[in-house]
Image (cartoon, rainbow, N blue to C red; front, top):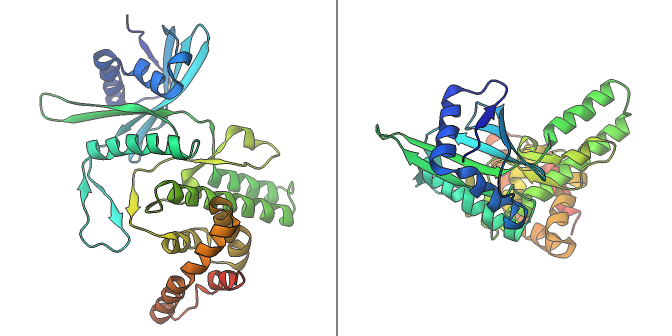
Length: 312
């Protein structure tokens, strides 16, 4: 017998109806738990299932699901996407394919499986995806992922900023913590590029898209981070483009280049190979710097170029 779902908070009625359909018609939860937690750790029967909204806007509504059983509890995330067409863009291509939501979600599941094998912990493990069409031709989707407790890198930076304002952190310690978080962010996103055969990169390499694990909320800075969302990827990109994007996102300032960007790349690729690939990226970045200087009249790339020249 299917265990009834209990809803807490203020879930949207449409979302409740979608998840309830997946639960009663497709019995999705045991399958998702088995895929994420492996058969040996999935209980034979559930006692209670509770869902609460984490976010109901944006590209996907996100609900935390807690499944309780005799041995304890297991938590996953249910995502309900809005039907739309998603663009996967290369960095230079003019002909851009458009994928339907169904194709996008299937790709996310395959991507999560790939990353679970190639770089465990880099992205949440997937519990699978369920699609169905109603009598009016409307498609519905439920995507299930591993729940990882934590806080975004950006929120952690804001917390450090507040500690500085409150006098808890001195300026030197505040800056050092921010650089270490930025270094972790760079390393995590470069690891993603590396795991995707060094051909694909996320279109959202921001600190909002990285989750520091819950144990990092205290005195210790996080040593690892998990990417939250990969719904949009840029294809056929090399390290020069990745470095350019990350430098733009995290700030083209000398201290960021020297203390976060360059060390982060080396953390991800290893000192020897990272050093070689960064120097190989230099001609591309020099050309981009010349284009920007011609168009804007400003040498915005100088901090990045100087950090790379220092590697020679």
